[in-house]
Image 1 (cartoon, rainbow, N blue to C red):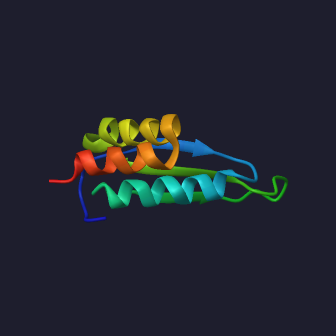
Image 2 (tube, rainbow, N blue to C red):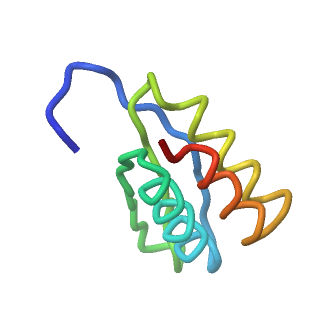
Length: 88
């Protein structure tokens, strides 16, 4: 991500065995939709898989959330359609 004074906000947060793969998928979806994102991992010894978050610039958070929701509602096909709608 380019340096900016704009705040980063969390658009995804998860923990558990599936959180890492879900975060990777969301990160890839956002990046392919033109939204740079930061994948943040917090590992805790007591938890097999720690907290995973995806952060984006505050100005892109609403768009990122829309893309994530579309992906969750319709699976891979809807995610591709949401991605196509954001392409210029």
